[in-house]
Image (tube, rainbow, N blue to C red):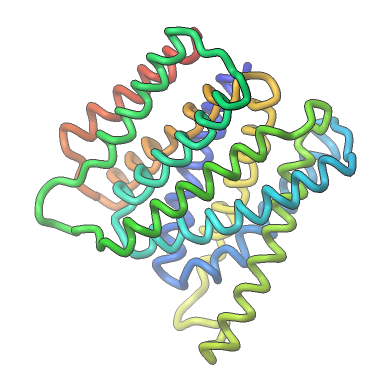
Length: 282
């Protein structure tokens, strides 16, 4: 069940990144997050109250606040990178680090990995690297976008590690508290940015409400399901499966935006599926 939950979170994150990246290209990442985070907060609160039973303890609140602060930083950086670089490149770069950090944390905590699990983790890491390979002279990703993506990966990896430390009886309350705290931080950051730049919240043309709300809902769903996965399995394994989300982003970018996918990247997608299957057997 832990592997299934991790796969669901991976697909949800990949789709959320695609939609959030599209919206950010039009109006900027802070504006998008100011809508997507509260929208996701409403959804995850409903799930916490009506669908997933859990205990809202003081420990859950503090872990949630910590995860929310780190998660807001990570997602803000990711959306900024997606707005500046090619989706099929930025997202996988972030995923490499976002998966590696929880693996390291899990090993430090004393998690014991079987040979099959180690093989699956290595295959997943190679898959993300292959998927992230950029070929040809077209649409080169700026170095600034790559640097932001790397920073985002570290922050998101830390977020997943904190989320994985949630109390076993907390249900999805840690993810819920984290989402609302993130929403507050994003709104504060947006207000500061608007005041310092003198820009208005409104932008030319229509605001991509549908994209922003859908991205927020899917991202919140992914966070909730990942918390359930971490409660039921090893953090090192579920985090690596969750980090395979660039495959979904890549395929959506290919078929909806007609971004080019090389043969090597397709091999990476196939290897990602094989890695997920291997980890399911671990």
